[in-house]
Length: 261
Image (cartoon, rainbow, N blue to C red; front, side):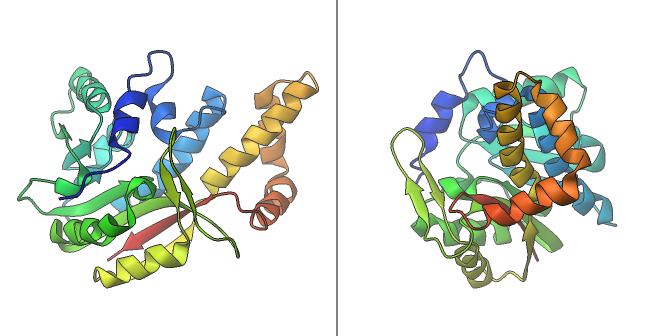
């Protein structure tokens, strides 16, 4: 079984003593914490809708669960939640938070998402922003593994950063190993793994990028970042709508979300 080449990066990053672990997991260091939490709540909302729409059991497998933020926020909608992450610090944090809140149905294990050792089948499998850290040769085996752990009628939720427009994929190595692939590449892999695919843009990620720009400009002019962000939200049809279209003309990564059945 191949292992993630980014494993060492995440094990080390999770040990950062001064930053909020969710910001470490999401790599949104440049966002003010208040804006980061707002953007994160929007992203969690996508998965929340999926769970609320289910009429049967809600047993969740969360691959690359990080510090357990999604599990902790959505615990009230799940019958059980099993999270896997390669970083022991993330897993220990998630376990501590679940124990403090009395959420006994949340479980977290240290391990690679490429080698889940569990006989249970799940109604929802979550791959939240982690496929970029998987090498090309491991994508299809991972998705087939996700399918093998999916209960009949279950769904796989995927959120991933992609390269828009005509630009080719970008592969970063060294200090931050990640693959920014094309959405079409993921769709091909998902279908080869036997899934029916639906997808849409995750605009919360786009707003995170725009918020960084707004707050930077606000600080330049001596204003607070949150004030600029709130003004931008009120002018959403113009400020965010136009900026989203302009971003699509650049090679900057954008986030997509997929629901696989």
